[in-house]
Each structure stands twice: as C-alpha cells, then as structure tokens.
Length: 635
Image (tube, rainbow, N blue to C red):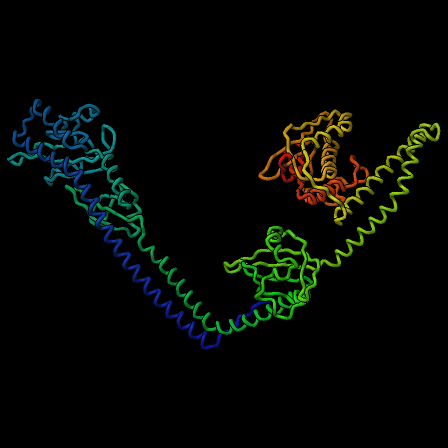
C-alpha cells in the first residue's frame, strides 16, 4: 500500500518560489560581504606578518653592517694605517659579536690584503677586485657613488653563496683609500626566516629590484608568489632594494563556501518545512484513514484466528481479547478487559508455575482452562513479553487441545489393547522357540539352530517393546503404582553395578563409583529400572576397554547421580528430542545399536512421578546422563 502525497495549490508554489528567490539574493549578498570582510582581515594579518618578518630580517643584517661601519671609523681614525697586531685583536672580536659574519676582508687600493678568518678563505687573499669581471661593475659603482651597499646573494671565489656588504672608505681629504667587505652567511638567516614563516603559517619570497620596472628572479622562496596576487612589500636595506612577497597558507575567504552551503541548507530546510505545513492537514487526514483501515484489517485477522489471543499489562490484567477467546471461554462480548487472566484457569494458583514454564517465547505448557459456565477443558499456553512505548505487556496464546487429548487417549488405548493381545501369543511363541533352541525337541542342524536362534532373539526384542509400550502407557496414564520410601541409594547402585558386570565384562568395560552413603525417597523397583537403563545405554555406546563412572553430586536439597561414559556423545540437534518417545539418533534399519527408543522416555516419566528430574550434559569426551532426587536423612 503506497502513500500518495497531495499536490499543493498554485499560490502555495508561487509563495515558495518567491521566498526562494528572495533567499537566494540575500544569501549571495551576505556571502559577498563576508568575502570582503575576510579578505580585509587576511590582508591586515599578512601585512602585520610581513612587517614582523621584515623587522627580523633587518635586525639580523644590521648587526654585521653596524660593526663594519665601526671598523671603517677605526681605519679612518688611524689615517688608513693598518697595524697587524691591532687587527689580530679587532677582527676576531667583530666576528664574535655578529653571529652571521662569515669573514671580514680589508682591501686597500682594491686589493684584498687582510681576511679574517683566513682558514678556508686563502683563495681570496691578495685578490684584486678589478680582476673579478662579474663583481667589479657593482664595486666600481659603489666607489663612484661613495655609498655602502649590501649585495647578494653572490657566488664567492672561495666557494659558497653569501651576502657581501661593501663599504667604500675615503680619508678626510676625500681621497679613496680602499674598500671593506663583510661576507654574511646566508644559510642561518634563511633558516631563521623559514622557521618564522612556518610559525606564522605563511609562504614568502624575496627578489632584488634591478631598476624601476625590472626585478630579478626570487633568490628565496617561490617566484610565483610575485604574480598570484600575494602581498608585495618593498625593502630598502643599506643600499639593497628588495621586494618581499607574502601569502597566508590559510585562505580566510574560504569561509564563504561553508557559509553559502549552510545558508542554502537552512533555506531549503525552511522551504521544505513550509511546504510540509501547507499540505500536512491533507496528509494527516489520509494517514488517519489508512491507519483506521489497517486497524480494521488486523482486527479482522485477529478475530478470525482459531486460537484465543490475549494481551495484558505487566500485572496480568487483560487489556484486549479476540473473538476466538470469547467463543472459547463463553464470556459475553467485551467483558474480559479488566479481569486478571488467571480467572480463565481452572486452578488460578498455578499462575506462577505457568510463568516459570513459559519464561521464553518458544516454550509451551499444558494446563486446564475454565469456561464462564464453570466447565473445564485442556488447553495449551504460550506467552511472550512485549515492550511497547517503554511499557511491558504480555501476549498470551491459548489453544483448546481437548480433541488432541481425546485422540492421544484413543491412540494410547489402542496401543495398550494391541500390546495386551500380542503379549500372550508372543510369550507362547518365544517359549516354544526357546525349547527348540535348547534342544528339547531333538537335535538340530547348524542352519536350523541359527534360524531358530534368530527368531528367538527377535521375539525377545518384540516382547521387550511390548513391555515398554505397556509400561509407558501406565506411567503416562497415571495407572502405575509407586511405593515411595527412604532408600539407600549407594546400596542400590552397587546392586545395579553387580547386575551389569556380566554385560560389561565381554568388552572389558569397567564400572566405577564412589563409596559415599546417600538416602533418597523413591520407589526401589522403579529407581532400579532407571539406573539399569542409564548404565545399559552407557555400556552400549562406550568403546571397548573404557570406564563408566557412577558419580554422586550433592546439591542444595537434592542429590544428583551422574553416569559418565567415554562414548561418542549425543548430536547437538538431537538433544531436545532425547527424552521423547521412539526417539533414536540413528533411526536407520541397519543401525549398529538396537533399541525401542522408549527407555529414556520411561525414565523421564518415572523421575517425574518420584518428584525428581533427569537430564543430559555434553562432555569434552563422552556423555553424562544424570537424575536428581530429594535427599532424605538416614533412618
């Protein structure tokens, strides 16, 4: 059954369209304003960051430049006279004060005569600047303009790349004396600049200004930053004209995309909710009609079920009941709600027992129902627990099994009648065959003896089947008599062990039990029948030269007797049918172990009549059949 959404009226669609257009215009206006604001904030942030980086760069370079100017003042004060002893003290001190100075060179008359430190710079000593074709035009321009200049990065004659601060020196008579060159290590400055850029989360580049409109390629950073709209600042440092390009790695304008998505989502949500409100009344009306139709359909199905279905609250008070329930119990219509469901039982006091027996939804239990006219009948009860709106409910399924009980009774009576009628002639046949096999009718040939022995064995098995059928019929029908009295359980097990030794001995199977002394209230013959059956089954399925252990396990008020063997065990799927009639794991005609399939069912009936229980446990190797009985003090 599908739900068709009703269409909106034309003016509803027109209003939604108009609101959508207005929302679109407003969102784009808001996003544009946000982009402008974000761009302004980013520009201000980048400008502040660029100022800090420029100040750091100037600070790192100014120290060696100021020291160079001090050295020039010293030479001028000495009228250009250089004393080796004084320079050996002065130059190391200058290098130590400025951490980025690689070396200081003094070139009177443009010839480099003093270099500190000399180690690693031997190739530069006595170098005549006019001979350096690449650098002399710049040096000559510095001398002509009488202005110090920071140049670089420059490839050094002695190897490596560095900045060089060249200071032309003139005496008091304005006569050119020479030039002082301070070589500044470039790598530590770049490392510090890179560290600062990473901390500020920016990308930057540096390049030299060649003329008013010409620039070199970047000597630090990505050259593309000068052409992609990044912030560009001019830096003038001791005659060096540079440009710095900077761009933040975080694009603040990127917030416009999530803002646009959010606003569009909210607008779409608002229009959807508004559209929903427009047709909600029609939809709710149609849904209410469908719910009513569904309830009527479910009620019709529920009322036409043959079994009685009842729902109760957690206290057992009936809330609903189908028509089959009223027909089954004979109550007037709508008279059951408000009553406790135990009023439908012949013995209301059994409610707790029924709750315990139907603790899971897959369990069923038989009981007696009570009709409104006072008559009782057999019923089968199943119970499920429901959780509706965090409130616990019970679902009870009650089925009238009167006819099934009648059919079972007729079947049992038929089996009993047939068994009784077969017992007498079968006893005569078995006896006659026994006499013939024993030689009472004369000497037999081997083939005759084999055939008669086979017939006698089959008669014996058939006789045992008839006895088991009659036995279980008496037990299930309540016709068997039980003489319950205190019984020494240990002595009874010893007798059973002795009785079964002859069966176990040919296969070298040993029977063991502990010597503890326990008493129970039981019928001696019936309990012996249970013990012999369990021990016989253990011998039948145990391998040769194995052991069967009879073990006592005291419980709170009961005593458990376990029969443990080392056989193959019971298949997991067969365990639920283990104690039912005619149940055999191997039901093939050529099965290796003969039996009627009634022994364990008889044992269960006997233990029930003696207020005990019987069960099975799978062992790591073998099986454990056990029964439990209430303990009794020794008389």
